[in-house]
Image 1 (tube, rainbow, N blue to C red):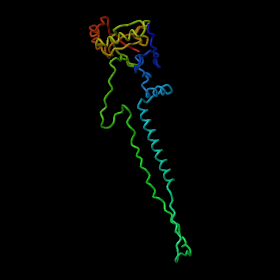
Image 2 (image 1 turned 180 degrees about the vertical axis):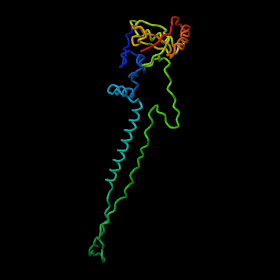
Image 3 (image 1 turned 120 degrees about the vertical axis):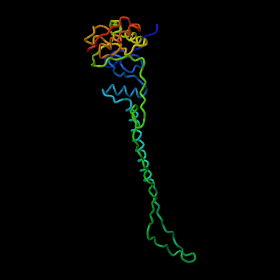
Image 4 (image 1 turned 30 degrees about the vertical axis):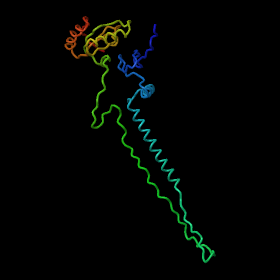
Length: 244
């Protein structure tokens, strides 16, 4: 008998989620999945601050720090070069007058001091920071990220409407059974399939996990979807109103 794998739970609503799942199926919150260095940094940020700007902040911060370090190193090297430049002093040698007799030396009227030419300071051009990942740039075409084909639909927060109830499973049986039935409905070809906690909606009987298909604005749209559900393995499907 293999030991059960440890489960992770959503920090907002406490519902368990599977490894590598990005969003909570219950409340829609983004899950703290570790995706390398960026994932670790993002998780640490979200544990201390409620607002998180997105993963693009890390490459931008990296390039900003790299630019500051390069600028500081260039200024320090230029200052050290100026201090190390030597100073040349010209002197006059003694002059011999007559054969073999040294009468004296010509007086040195002035000391010629010459300094090496100062090297021009390096020019450092700080270009614009790179665009954040996912942000569109001028003249570039943004390609949307592919959606997860296994993700279940989430009922819009604060919105009432109509849907087709495929099955209502007792909450005592666990959410995993409802999720499995919802994924089976997706494989059968039904669209916008998800799981509702009936206790969170006044129009539904509490104590059930409701497997639904479709998010409709009118009863006629929901009625059209019932026949499709009957033909795809859910003969007891019926339409109902969903109200918070």
